[in-house]
Length: 313
Image 1 (cartoon, rainbow, N blue to C red):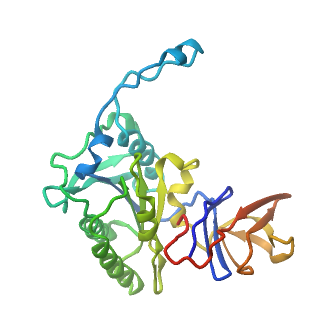
Image 2 (image 1 turned 180 degrees about the vertical axis):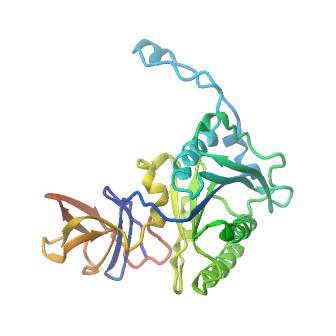
């Protein structure tokens, strides 16, 4: 499956052997959703947690650009604040489990901050963990969230979503894949609510290729568990929860899909689903969605058969 940046109004695009699965940008409301945010606490994140005060340069002053906020901040804090504020509006009780992961000498510990509300997020500071990790191990954080979600089921949790903020350099990919298989099996057997994970890369050192590999896998009866985002590229808050959008949701009254030669591929006469699935020739370079009198063209990757390259999901 190949990689191509989605353009609005799409949030994710998959294209493999002529099969297209395109998710439309949609701000979903999911009953009983329990959300958590885990921040990378590994030593590689040291620079991202360092507090700095942005200074106004001479040219900015000369052209009249407003002076920056004098309050020191770090790379992670503003990103986590807006995610917390937004995700709390999706959470069943408006409170998110917030923690640092990849802590301790072995990078396998989780430092839980607590249940934080989405209102007045500026009162929260995220200076980094007490004991930064020597390695970046994600699997223990996944297990921590799964245990937490199971404890919340008797209290009303019906769906789970954990967001992991990272600089994108993991040291336990095999363990992560093993935990994901366990999660998928438990979800498929009804032992765990439907659960999804989101990797959000921050900072200049994001290993996006690795984020894509993690998000690549599909699991029997479950499909994708993961999606990934790069914080600096998120233009619409709904992109953060695209993984929660499914085929049961609709976004508009009808629409038409065209291939790159202008031929009709599929018509939706009733409501337009939030997830579109259709077939294109493998040599296709794009497709176009016509909805509400407007047309939106989404480019497709040139190299369709490159197994190691993944979409933006």
